[in-house]
Amino acid sequence: MSLEIVKDIRPESEVAPSPRLSSQLASVLRMAWVGYVVRGIFTFMFWSSGLAKLLDVDAGLAEMRHFGLEPAVLFYAATVAILLGGSFLVILDRWTWLGAGILAVFTVLTIPIAHGFWAMEEPLRTLEFHVVMEHITVVGGLLVVIYASATRKAAAS
Image (spheres, rainbow, N blue to C red):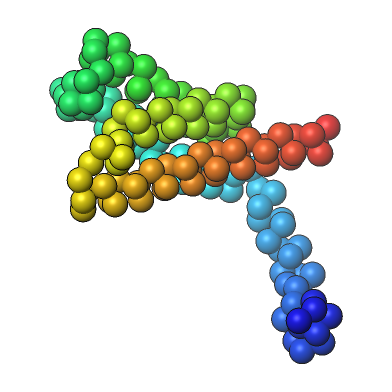
């Protein structure tokens, strides 16, 4: 079935959004505050984890020790700095490539440290495998953020 056949079956109004809707959506997406909100939502899993660790130092240190990360204080401080700092850079859209890049590397590193499904027994193996797939998807999303930010800034200059 070719694209022409599909296009002939459906009216043009169902194939593409109306120009008016596209224009309205574009004007909303150009509002600066919308960018902050969506980037804040996108980075929620990172900054909320960093904030939780900052608010409960004992739990954060226990998490580092649980995964064999010693000295726990050093890994704790680095983790909080990465989670909050990387999120902050992405949310503000300043050095987005650095913030999203740091978060992507951090996310990849958590796979062998905390989600080694290959060394687990079922049913935990399958559960952790799906967590790893989600982590890889998040890394892809972070790369899209880097690309979108760079593309938008290049178009603006």
